[in-house]
Length: 222
Image 1 (tube, one colour):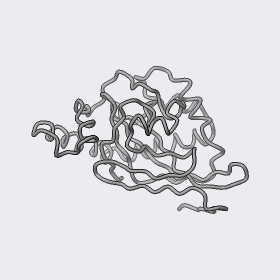
Image 2 (spheres, rainbow, N blue to C red):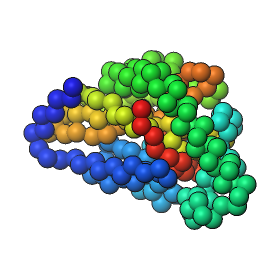
Image 3 (cartoon, rainbow, N blue to C red):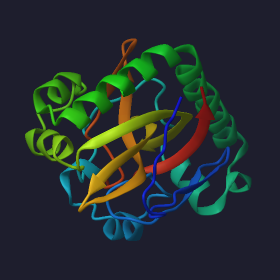
Image 4 (cartoon, helix red, strand yellow):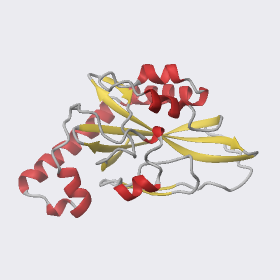
């Protein structure tokens, strides 16, 4: 399905998918995946750039609701550090968010397809229409996302979804491996599209790897 004609061996993205999170090794400055988000990682990734997300998560509540501060505890000290009650809440959240992905995979894939088409076309109006309705208009984010990448040639959506949380927001990252030519050099990159699931519909979100407090929950496959 995917055709790759790389003129140079330029960008290599190595992703280690684990139940607890997602580790990243990457080269290049434009393609990105969310790594374990810490302030240092966010700063190194240029977190103030618009398409990497807003600095502060919107004051909204997603269902399933991220269990308060537990994701941070897991990120810092692992699940063994949790009390019995916290471990039950964490396991429940893992199960519920995985079910959101598996039970609504076709819609997620369709939204990812539409978002990638709009990104490739630089269509800020289409991207704006896909933004979560409970987030304030994010013109800077949408405009920067529409103009974030060189002209995309091929793209191939991946079967993994990275699940993250920030405050009471749950973010589902869909991934697409794309090729583009920049400065006469063709290369391949992984582009992440952050989404939220609201009332049975997938939307793109302005919450991203540049958002303070974003922490890894798990990675699931569709």
